Image (cartoon, rainbow, N blue to C red):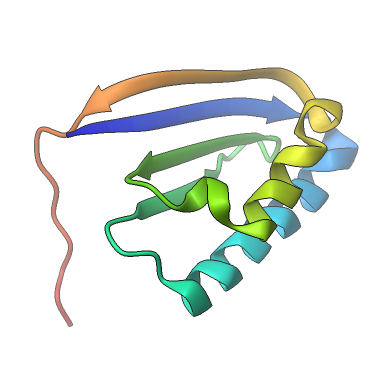
Length: 95
């Protein structure tokens, strides 16, 4: 199974708005819970770089994701760079 890994850097003044839009995507995912989708997003320690990891379908159909995508180019300084990755292993603790 192939996974998309996307990395980009936002303008300093756009980083918080970018994070807010990503949080809206996760809020919608919590409600709609599309089957077979794994998605995670990270804000890196420089405060302006973001990393997204997506595996499966359904993300593009979410209105919150479409809103996130709509102004993305205006928020960016660099990227987005998208590569495909194949998972070698993973671990999640079960609490």
